Amino acid sequence: MNDQKVAIVTGSSSGIGLESALLLARNGYITYATMRAPEKDTPIKAAVQKEGLPIRVVQLDVTDDSSVKNAVDHIISEAGRIDVLVNNAGYALGGALEDLSMEEIKSQYETNLFGLIRVTQAVLPTMRKQRSGRILNLSSGAGIFGYPGGSAYVSTKFAVEGLSESIAYELEPFGIKVILIEPGFIRTNFANAMVVAKKAQDPASPYSELMQKIMASASELAKNASDAELVANVILDAASNPNPRLRYLAGKDVESWAAGKKNMDELEFFNMIKKLTT
Ligand SMILES: NC(=O)c1ccc[n+]([C@@H]2O[C@H](COP(=O)([O-])OP(=O)(O)OC[C@H]3O[C@@H](n4cnc5c(N)ncnc54)[C@H](OP(=O)(O)O)[C@@H]3O)[C@@H](O)[C@H]2O)c1
Image (cartoon, rainbow, N blue to C red; front, side):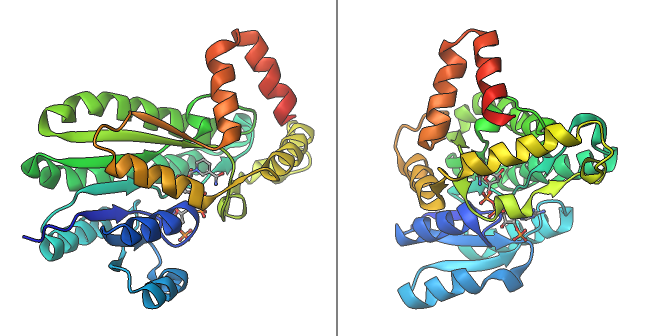
């Protein structure tokens, strides 16, 4: 068996997943940069060629049982171990709850929550047998507090928080650590990839004016977004620190909002988020 540590990153075609895969590989991890559409491997392949990084691209769609199984089986047979899983794949569904179809909500959960569960379940038998491993789950500021127009996305991230907190107890006896990464606004493809619910795009929606305000405020807040490299550095630290914490904030903006949630009374915090987002 190879002694070099092995990492798997989901959603490595862009943004936080891409930068994390590159940084883990630069720091000696044999890194499986997984993506649902491997034809999007141009940025990662260019860096691999230029820097000679130990990165392998593998197809993995977190919403597809057989894709997850095939990818993880392939990685185990090739690398013989899995030390780090970064559950990064995700997107945001936007729109007021009344404007979201059940289908749109289920798709959001299928990727952000069930996808994360699917990949985690696939790696656990190997980590458990090794009696070691790290599972890093991408949560968000949206895993700490809610905001208007974000109920579906926010509720997936709250679910990721609760799930991670719970399995941390189950997995500790097997030497497996579970870690939540909570970024603020990060400059990636995330805003472009956001799915605005069909009914929320209808100007006749009773929430149309509110949604416009939310979108305008989000664009303003995004002007101070951090780069994906900042989150990649937090991920590398959490993956390699001998005594990692359960939670890591990533970004000055989310640090201040998380402090507000902790220190303000509920109404004061509600009014702050209302002012920021509408
Ligand atoms: N950017 C932010 O402000 C921010 C803040 C807090 C948390 N986050 C979280 O950070 C994570 C990464 O987001 P990002 O900002 O880097 O956005 P991004 O640039 O849009 O990257 C998202 C990645 O997820 C992939 N993905 C989506 N659905 C997938 C599926 N079914 N199977 C496999 N991969 C899938 C995308 O692949 P395709 O290229 O094929 O679409 C892409 O590689 C997400 O979980 C997000 O919720 C982001």
